[in-house]
Image (cartoon, rainbow, N blue to C red; front, top):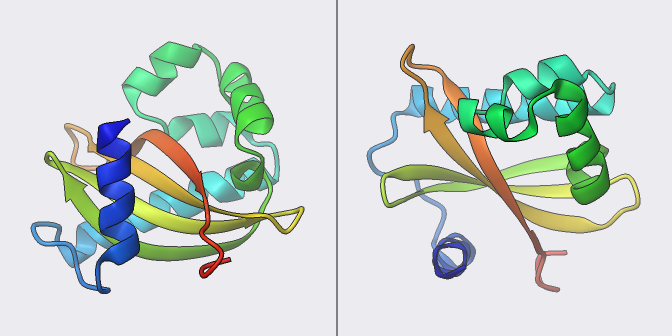
Length: 139
């Protein structure tokens, strides 16, 4: 929880800047992975969405269908995102954390913190997401 709070405060108070140590090409690749997974959720493509999850997340949920069920029930704004705005990316203990402002189908906005993991082949996978309500000034 302390890690979450530290990352959240960093992302909410930092002036917009490029994350040190993360190449522009990696930042673009991370954003593409997140965008593509959200696009897969929009059309209930469980297999494609599951493919963007890290091996640890895949092992935790076992099947694409179980993964999609978890997202559907616990991450409604992500599951049916209608508006996605990428904010800053930070590095917390060597882990890139991409902040994404998401407005769901119901109009509710959240800040999603995507914890990313580089794979042995150099690609990026999503290794966890934490959702926080947006402060009034950002909603």
